Length: 356
Image (cartoon, rainbow, N blue to C red):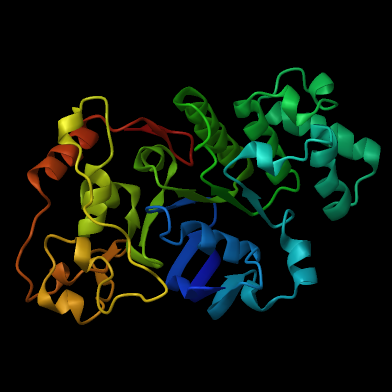
């Protein structure tokens, strides 16, 4: 597979009155052509900061990329000027934000907001841009696009507004689409529709997607690969099947255990004890150690490397060291993994075949 994007040893910090917040601490990841990479983790784990760094949207001050490379098309986005980044944003890499109402300008028709990028990046005339905007509204499932193109955001429901935001993001046929928790503000029925829409659009357009979420249920339905983030670092990465059915990091076990399902009673949900660390003063060793019931002495002294489990599966936990005691996921987690395997959702593969 062709790597379309590669992030190498990315460090992002923010200067605050309380000190320097080391929000992203040495992230390495890549995105392949036509795939969906999900980045998951609790709030504050560094997911959105990583995605905004890729887009060049880290406000400086107070934020800054301290180290690292973001390689796209043979160029390092981290070293580009704002003018250079503006030529890439929207045309080559687009982003869907969490709340569609704050993403849209309430004083402009949705048609004009879609047309902006088409006129700027693709040099279309206003007539051509409007025609393309109508096509895009139809593509994302907006009924009566000829009429709706002249309406304002407040005249759309939450789900329809998110479809408009997706139309704006796709207007210039970007090679990469970053979706930052795009279904969080929507009810579950609309969530499912938006996820199905993203899958269909990816199949039609071949766009590569980075999907940011804290919801592992969403991940199971859309991702090809998963990167699990904690305290500004990637602690486990693998294919969606490897992460769901063979997780190796205790934090991933915790995320799976806290995920509700239709056949899970409230008593069976497992909460991860404690809170994420203060990243103004990151802990020595493994940042997850204070919350990890399987932590060993070495976890408080040395940061674990990413141990290789397979060619596509890596996890940063000392439990994978050859001298570590053999520890398996708790029975409740095993039960959850077994239940997910037996009720695996039907997925549409890149060649259009269904599996599951």
